[in-house]
Length: 384
Image 1: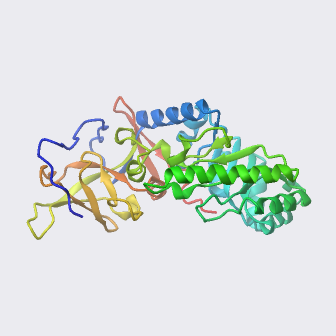
Image 2: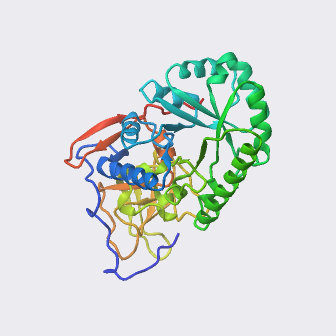
């Protein structure tokens, strides 16, 4: 990918500006969390969401860490959202009292046993999008099924899981017939993950949820929770339709969110410390580049079609990661800026931070005073 030429004095790599120091003596690659920036992100979104009359039920699949969940709950979160029963158990065992599994489940015998264990420890909400899944859940959980708060997923345009607004009534009727409670509705406006899609996705989300809520109430179902919001849309939402939002990436930020315009460069709190292991000045035929010791096995390999690379370099916004192998990143470097030296350590911003976190057992949390501690990625790999 070519790097546009700009005057030498028009842009400079940010060797120290707004960046935490990489602790001396660490082995790279190493996932680092800037705790001060993390806390600022948690507090900012908590304040913004509350000011809009909404509850915040953040998605913990992004961070999977107890230390961050505690900070979110202390900032006023109404509970946590998770992706799997395993994630839910990890947080419930650590004392989180309200948990929403925000995906449709097909409950088998093994999973039913784990859900029953979970229900002894937390108030549980579970997503569903079909009559068949509701009936299966009722069979597997027996009399305990009535204690579950069902939340019906509505497809608002992402076209992954979720029923139409019209289909929600049949699902709610089936749940009532099976002795289960329908507590609310939710959606994931995943089509907001494109540079020109945020406004349309926000409108789609509100329209689909408003229609579903109206139809369900007309059919005699009491809808208390109307849940939406991904990181691109959460801070733009209000309570005209929604009662809560469920962003996840906001605690860290990543290269995708920066390119979508939903996070400031200086607010990104998670980076991967990496070392320059190879450097090449290049010429007219060979690109000017460095190679870092962080590849797809720590950064993840996600790259949307609209993204400008496989990640970004925090010290140099103009640089681009043009290729990833398992253990290396090739970084095209602007011609007007000096190439980093062999052994220099840089902060790499992953494209998709959720994937990067799930690839490591722990992260190094660095505080403003320079002290650091290890935080375990406690819910890593709990995929069922």
